[in-house]
Length: 268
Image (tube, rainbow, N blue to C red; front, top):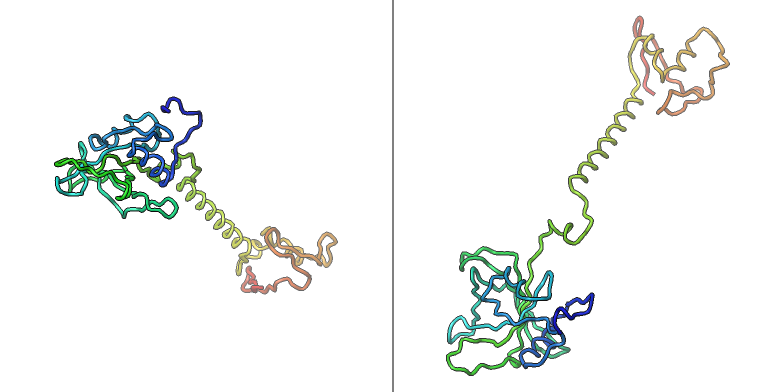
């Protein structure tokens, strides 16, 4: 089945075991695969950014059947050089099992531009799947550089975390906006604290005239007036304005003359 004949919504996300058992093994045995969407391409004749154009199916990752050649005539090391770089193995090989049976190996590689050992690491990643030694086809041709007739390769380009919010549609908060918001909260808290401190700050020494004109000391003017009783003044519930707790009779702070024209307030 060609890629153009695939049903709508088709996605190709096989497991490691499925790639070995249903695709690579069938390819090695010249049997048809469940879906014919993996092309036969010698990937080492191309650079990784050229490979997406060699396949009909795939968006963010691409699969290929490719042969492997020997690096040296009598050696078992594969030749991984490309047009302008090379693939370098990283990490350890992963054994692939089908049930309890060992069926293949998965190897991770990174593409480097340039020539070893001075290559520049890129974001291109390859997962190479090969059959276990018992299932590999021996090549008895004398003098042949062919190491494996077929391995299966999955190639993709690593995505950076800085672009994930755009490419995957995730809703990340802007760090700068968050810092600004945090600063505003701190400023508001500090402002409230300053205001609270200002409201609760009681002058220790000031002129009598200035003291009586203060909004939050208005009840004192009633206390110091000539009238012995003022029906408009509630002696049972004396307050000092917004931000001050209500005072009951007997809780009024004491005042005494500090010098001529000034009074001193004893703190409560």
